[in-house]
Every structure is written in C-alpha cells, then in structure tokens.
Image (cartoon, rainbow, N blue to C red):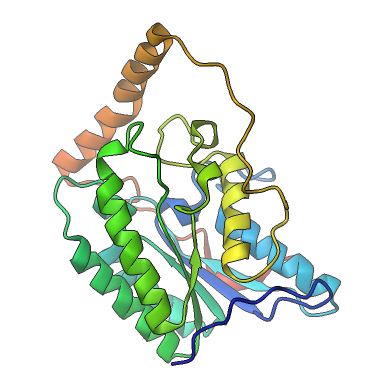
Length: 274
C-alpha cells in the first residue's frame, strides 16, 4: 500500500478532504473546551480542525467541509470501534480520526498489544474503504504528575501507532513529540483533559500531522516559565484533585458505570462547517 508522503501544503490550495468524521472518547469529544456559542456543549481540537479545514477550503473557492463527531466520553477503544467505526465508514468520509486507548491505559490492567491490534484492524478497515485515517500519540509528561505511572504504557502504545501508520498509510498527530503540550497549564483541573488553549495547540499538531501548516506557527514553542508553587500549595492542590476527580473516577470503576453512559454523539451526521 502506498504511504502518504510528507508534504507541505500550498497556501493557495484547498485541503483535499471534503468530509471528516471524528470517533473516539472525551479527548475527541472536546472536554473541557467549552463552546463559545453553547455553554452546554464542548468544542475541542477535532471541531477546531474541522473549522480550519473548512475555512481554508472556502478561501480557495471550494465547498465547505462536511463534519461529524461521534466521540463519547469515557469510552474504551473496544466500544469506540464497535459502536462508532461502522457508522463513520458508512458516511463515506474522506478522512476519519480514530483516537482511543487512553481510557484503557488508565485501567489497573491493560494489554497494550491487544488494544494496538484492535486499532490496527480499525485503521485497516477504514483504509480498505478508501478513507484516510488520522491517529494520535499520547503525551509525554516526563514521568511527572498524576499520569507518571502510565508513561511506559503510553510509550509502547505510541510505538504501535507509528508502526500502524507506516503499515497502513495513515497520518499521526504527534503529541508525544510536541513537548510544549505537556505544560500543566494546558490541562484542566482533572489533569487528564485539555483546556481551551490545549485544544487549540492539539488542533495545530493535527494540521501538521496531516501535512498542513499550523494556524499558529509558534505552536510548538513552550509557554513562558511560571512561578514554582510552594510545597503547601501543591499539597492542597493534590488533595483537592483527589477529592473532586479521583474519588468519582474510582467510584465509577467500582460500580461499572461510565461518564459517557446515556450520552449520544454531539454531531451524529455530516453537516457543513461554515
């Protein structure tokens, strides 16, 4: 299978994708980037990517991008593929982003090789249908913070993702290689979802992964240094985080419930982005 070459976008041309479907979990649903037009709705990097692709297409005299987002928070990779992939392929889009596995990695026990095989099969199905695929690596926090213990799992999964991309001719949104995204200020209070600024950065990482220019040419530059918090402030912050976020997460695991239970996709059909 022919692999996608590393190309640089001609600024005068329209992105070639006419339609795009995002599938995944809370990351692609857009937590916690609140929509500026609907405070009850999340926006997020996938929406921002769709908006940019559509704007560039229209600026070049082409039709607006058509976009759907089937991602639902709390989903592990298996349910993402079982519940969202067929619907996405049936829409016959030009591009699908398949981002998942993060919720699997957070579990006490996970078989990384198994979820990588599931992802490989999903990508192969989409590619066989003539659809371009965008995947994404996890972030490297350098073994620091609340996700320090998952670093080796994320690194192994990332290695699989790059191999799948090479084998299947897919694109990769490389968060691991973009060091600036690990800044804690780009992550929400729960420490596992992005802020609005974080989602904007990831949208640029996605554009670059697709061989397009970022909206912000300085996207990969680190933020200015922030004051170092005192030990007392860090301790209070960790205690508050455990009470507000870790406790409810553990309760959901023990009761077999999910934050995505009874939720439906926010954009279930392809619609023009204007």
